Length: 453
Image (cartoon, rainbow, N blue to C red):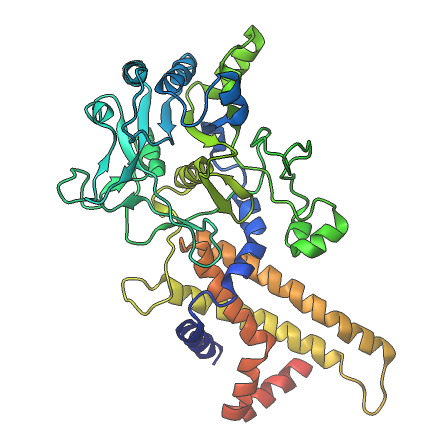
């Protein structure tokens, strides 16, 4: 009965309200748990290099900076011999700049020393990924082009998913899936590969902040950081308002997950700083992006708030390096025989809820019933406490289901939460029990007698 009710609720609510019915807010509530389980990931192999306002000011540049600035940055980076470099800056505009040859030479020099280079490319109206002609002539020789276009979630604008490859023209030479994403291309530098499917990859955002991250302030001119360190997991699972009651920074997002190097630190270094940078960069994958006050290359993370867009590619790369071809798929519940993982997960979810949780609930509520006509004060208090206890039990069951869905069935975060929420709602409102009393009253009576004994 529970399985049938769960299936019926899931399909009916998706048909009536769309699959996102209360799912997004619940997903944000569970995101700290998923990030905590994710642990350190592979972030030690990844570095983000940020071009910020301070770096541009010290180089006497304005955005868009001259090509010579990018060339000098890559030249300084090459000294530390990174494994691969991805430049999340689109060099497509036909602008007059006599320093362009310096950028061309430096990109090829990086490739010659053994560092793989990837440049961001954007799709035009002809479904082609093109850069300005001088760079285009070097594509496939000195660097590879990768797709960077990202579409945020239609409802809450958060970055829940990541597309591993974007479609392109059939004559573009990039295979049936078009252009590879930055994360997929960088992942393949290690010799592995991951299958590209019509389902995007469901992102898991790590919740353990790096030692060095984005240097944004909470407001212009303020010294206080926009982000915070995580508190213990039970506190992180509280709603922001409740969390802010215990900690004054409870409403702030977490600081970013990946170690960050600011571009200005490469301009001039002491021997001690040089040794630190070599340890941070040598043999690592470096993603170069921007964190500028007047440039809007940003994404919204469910844990980290508004952050530079380059961190999206870093997190997707981290997911691929952790999960490989078993990365989580952002799939929807359907009766497609080629995609039975979600119905299987729903069955597991309903069994986990209706067997141990249902038995525990009946046992507790039976003992909280008043004895005859007498009203017991302490039983009333315990009954009031049973409400929060049910919430805690529901959270624990949801966390368990999240682990099963992500690490056993490779399901996406939102897909799991959608099933978890509807499963728990069915129990909270006692839908299964009430319908059962109409269809199998004698069977339920025998079950209640068994529990009472």
